Image (cartoon, rainbow, N blue to C red; front, side, top):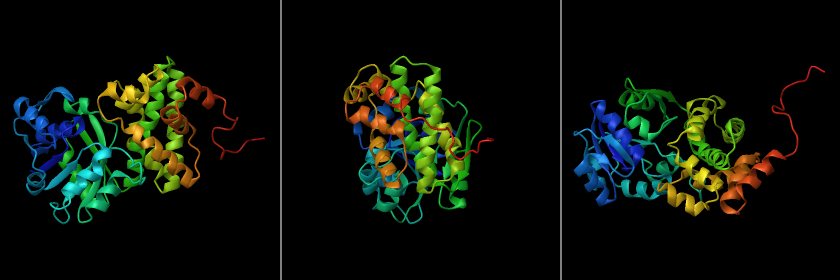
Length: 337
């Protein structure tokens, strides 16, 4: 049995807590919000973010971050990406040397362009920092629907330990050493999902969605490979797999926000309606800056930035993409004649 501390009581942290408790592990959930902890204690259900998913009675709850860390073998860092650094700073004085911290949020810090694991390693250098990514929605993991994830770490031993802790008959976990590729895929797919949602909001169909997903993974791959990620990672569960589920699912907050923007909402109005952090908005600017740094073309992500931050109408953005200069799909292929 592993003692696992969940840092962050949002929908994903709560769903993973359920999965871990069902695996027989000791689980303690921490939140900085006292009212949230009181609600979880009283109901054993997150009424706001994961309604209908009952938490096992074995799960405990606290607002004491030091106790959570001290009483745990492994930590799961599940706060939204925009709160990763501030939370890591709160954690740093309590983390034991070599203690595993599994980062499960998806995003790129918008001022440093660092991945989530890089931020945590910078703030808590004595930790063994890992990531857990893949095509997964909290609503489905919470009720035990079959799901696949990937555990990424610097060492094979750490990745395999995480795999052992999380894996069950409904949660299949693979391992990978390519943390960068996993995190870039998991972050940038949220930006493409905003575009897919905009297309849905505009009333476009399956043809448009297929194009956005396919050309979206091409953009993610170009940037990821330029930064040193593995092509295999970006064509796997944490690349194309995560992109598909986020662009298509009714559970996707990024798709929902994009859909509202396509229907005429402003960015602020859309995020207020979603009522949860829309990670793609924060990753969009970072992705654009990284593309400029590595001299990579990412036209869909460029248009998403224009819609979000320059008041370009979503329909005008689609027209801009459709009327780009003519080109071959794959420039490296040879013609017969």
